[in-house]
Image (cartoon, rainbow, N blue to C red; front, side, top):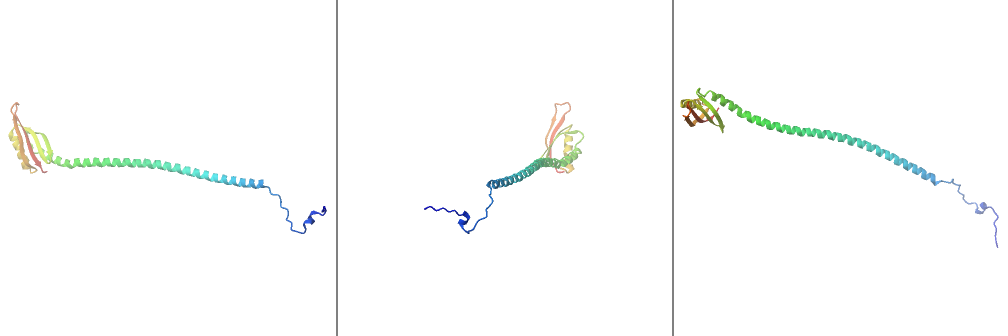
Length: 185
């Protein structure tokens, strides 16, 4: 037996609950919106990174210029140190020279007044406060007067004659001599 239902379908379900019809949603639009938001976010992020890169590049350039200037300044500082050290060495040499210079000036000044008229000094050596004086004279008396003048001055001590020779081979015989003494000027 075959049964055929000729009743309308709504009635067949009965008096149950019915959902309102939802509009049809297109997933293509959803993906387009997500894609545009993602592309916009990536674009903003790229723009922020690009601007940060340009700021950092400018800062690096500025620091590089500053470093170059500081290197030049340090180079000048090293050069100044070298010049300062050189000047200190020169000053030490000058002080050493001038320290002994006052003694030499006093020695020569005192010595000049001790030399008789007929006597010539040909050399003076100063070794460890001992003077070695060599010279020539017309007579041994002039050499003796010279030695006596040195003793009487009070500035020369331990006056001794080392050598006294008369050269008879010359037409005018000269006496060559060497005298040692200690200067206490």
